[in-house]
Image (cartoon, rainbow, N blue to C red; front, top):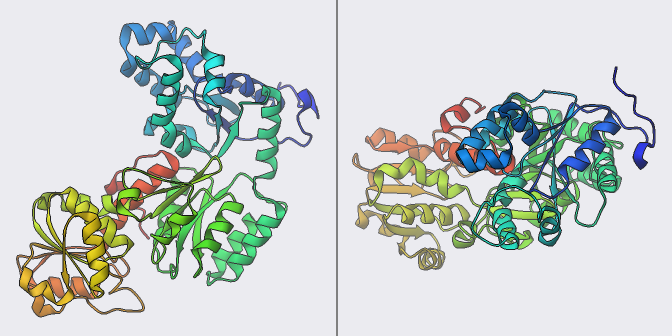
Length: 481
């Protein structure tokens, strides 16, 4: 028989209710073991440490496994142990590198609340200085901690539903805060009310609004659920809610994806931050404007592209990424080195230009406003020309990165007599799936790539950034509405 929770035990708040499973992630020295044991006592559930289970299963210490078999073998054992953890009624502590493996994230996130524990480098160094664990690099300890935290940062953010900085607190105080957070949620009553007012002022379908009213009620019916959504104006055409909510159901993730439609991206970001939103997909016309509201922008893509289509909110920071360029690049790998024309010069076009140049293509950008084409071409290192220059270029590939073809402007950016059979036409507009441009291209005998291909690839990357789960493009297509 389980020990009953005594109100106020160890200074923890009254009214604690059992949870299915709480998973603690984070680097060594952030307090996962100590805090996990306190939470297990307070909730009257078992505490399980994945590293200890590995040692029990193998009959060897983790330093010995690392020394004798190497890290790769250790990660194989770790994956198997994590896959067999109980599905409910437990507090789980994971090894510091477990979150890097997408297979572990599928197991750890299922029907769980994941709390990321963080600490500053000096605190971590002080706590683990005498640890028998083998070094992970050839660097001095302080530098190794900094290096590994930087390498794993994106994975830690993806692993987290909630964050807790344990640098200047005791394990009991940290456990108190975690339990209060899980009981009450992060957003204040005022933030929930403001969020409801925001959504009620939009054009949401009645079932969507009803679900949001349940989530944002005061007190919240489920304070642990996290909201995500698509930010745009308009964005009611987005297939994101249908796709991601199906994924959440199948992967047992306690999240809800909705529409953040408003003409002011500043207002959207204000509401999202106050409501402790987990992530946003950013669409027209905000992919460039959103950057001024971010705390960080991914240096490898978004800074060079100059546009963001994915925001991750984690540990108090709003971090911008660009996954559009991957959605453009992957269907075009077989055309590496081709002559390409890119139509448009906005945020999507910026990502497309980056992808085409990454494939060593000879790229010319065309736009109705030549100054915009020139600016993007200069930034991307390619050519530009006036819109009517298309007929003189005779490209192998044309990529439509304009909104033409999407409601309310359903025109094709090119006439049928401008197309020819040996041309590949890639329309990045994905609603409707078959645009007027694609219809004309098919009638002319062109090879065609629809915007659904881009949508699937970029959405796959978004899902990975938000949850650390890697799903194949083929499998993700099964969830499309």
